[in-house]
Each structure stands twice: as structure tokens, then as C-alpha cells.
Image (cartoon, rainbow over the protein chains, first blue to last red):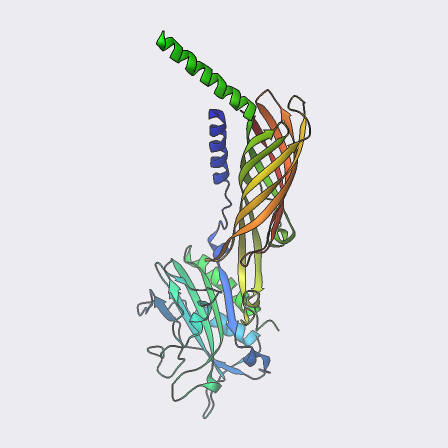
Length: 212
Length: 206
């Protein structure tokens, strides 16, 4: 019986050591997720104009990070602009009495202990879709709330498209018709993260509703 | 003299107990188990599981008939290449998609009452047997994507017909090779799971 006990223990230890490990590299945890309003994208969007923001909004640990490094803003916004143009939208050119059809918001969320919430099962799924009070500092701008996040060391880049044509001037809100998010662990060199962001944006804009 | 009688009585009791033990004929079977996914299990994870073990305690109620209890464990795992999945797979009302690598896990823990019939006597060089396990399967299904994990756990009623052979090495130890077909019926959380188990191990008689 003693031999049997030893054999069982050894077998259990070996099997425990063999438990499958999952991802091995940081970029294997990267995901791109999007959500959109089909009613908007079912329409013919030929000639639809969009306006890019001047800069990226940074949130850290749930608050706006006013000390954020904006040196990568141009690179990130250019990539998003290129994708919008490649998908047939026209960049808005300011002119007297003209308004863009869409406005773009780009939000970078980092947390030393945070991760962006994506829970595909009710009731969590729609959390990010709830409109909150107007974003501080935007003045007249999109009225959506922050995406929720939980504690983990992650980074998320959110691209929102707001339907400026349908803005509510009284409430000062803009309905969002598209929400795309890249999420992953904030680890690796700057160039490694840049490459992952670029790949993530490519993935995001290959998804519906742009893959028509 | 009285002490001597006591020793004698104890000796007789021990002999009697040992005799009972020999007559009772218990077996312990320890298996390394592989699992080949079938049906719905294969739809979710197509790769064979090489991670598994089972332990069975068996009591021979007749020379050729054993009843017992089996507890096992098999982990199925597959990592899927990066791909894009529509969110409507998760919720029909949601429009969108998710792109990333997916990691799928299935942990199966059968806890079965077993019955076996041995077609030959124990003094034969090969002892084919057939049997059936009936009981419950604890199953945990986990899908990881990015930093997110979807996990379902449930208890399933299930059964496992089994066939195999014992190859005695000596009076107390045999090599045991068996296959079983595990059927864990559907629950509200997890679909029916099926897999073919290949079991290789040892059987101890005592």
C-alpha cells in the first residue's frame, strides 16, 4: 500500500506540473474589441466627414492624467486618421457654417494596477455604453463616461466615434456610434508597445463595421 | 498461561481478519489517462488530452464481479491562433467583434460508481473485462482571451462504458489497459461532453 501511495503522489505531482500554461508572450494577451450601432453603419456613409481631436486624453487610475507624456499623440492620431480615410470617410475641413458628421475621441487608459473592463455577459457588458456627465475639460463635447476598469497593470486605447449630427445641444451630449478598444499588458520596450498598438489598430479597423 | 491464551486469541483473530481480507479481494487501480475529444467536446477543443489520471477502489463481490468508486481528472487544452470573433456569438443583440488569441480549457473530474465483469479467472495470464461507470462529472470550462476569462462550472450526470484487460505481473500486481467512453450529459451551463479515455496503469490486489 505504501508503494501505491507514493506512486499516486508522484503521479499527481507530475500531472500538476503538466497543467497547460496558456500565453507565453505579452502580445498574446492583446485584444482588439469593437462595438457599433448598426443603424448608423447600415446607411450609405459616402461623404461622411470626421474631425480628429488635437490630442489624446489620458486617464490613469481613474483620473485624468494631466502630467501624461503626449509625445506619441501625433503618431497615434495619424494612424487612426489613416484608417478612417482608408475606410472612405473624409476628414473635415473647417469652413464657415460647416460641421463635421462625426467626431473622434481617443482615450488612453493606464493603470499601475488597472485593466479595462470587458465583461461580455450581462450585466457588465453595457457598462461602457452608459453615458455619464460631460467629460471634464471638453466643454462642448462628447458626453460619455469613462470606460470602467479594474485593478491590473494594463493599458487600453479607446477610439470613440460620436455622431455630431445627432448631438443634443441642450444636454451637451453626443451619441457614440462606434467604440473600439485595444487592451493589453503594459510591458515591453516603447517600440514593442508601439508595434502592438499599430497591429491592434489594424485589427480593430479590419473588424465590423469597417470590413464591408 | 493466561497471557499465552490472549496471544493465541489475537493470533487467531489476525489470521481470521487476513483470511477475510483475502476472501474480500479488493483492488486499487491507478491509471494514467489520455482523452480523445469527441462530439461537442471536439467542437470546443480538438486536441487530445495527455493530462489525466484516475484512481479506482474496487471490491470483488464475486470472483469475477467488481464494484467500486472511481475518481479521475482530465484536462483538455487548446490555444487558438489569433482570430476575429463576432460578439453576436456571445450575445445576439450585440454588434461588434473581438480579435485576439483564445485559450480554451476543459477540466473533467469524473466521480463514478463502477461495475466490472472479468471474463477469466484470476489465475489466467490475461483477464479481459468490461464494465460501466455511472455517476457525476464535475466540469469546468474556461475560455481566456486577452486579460479576460469566461468560466463555467457545472455538475453533470454521466456514464462511461469501459473495456480492458488485466495482465497479471505477480499474485498482487497487474498491468491494466482500458478504454472508456465518457458521456457527461448537457446542463444549463455546459453542453454535453464526450471523450474517449485511454487508460494505462496498474492494479493492486489486496
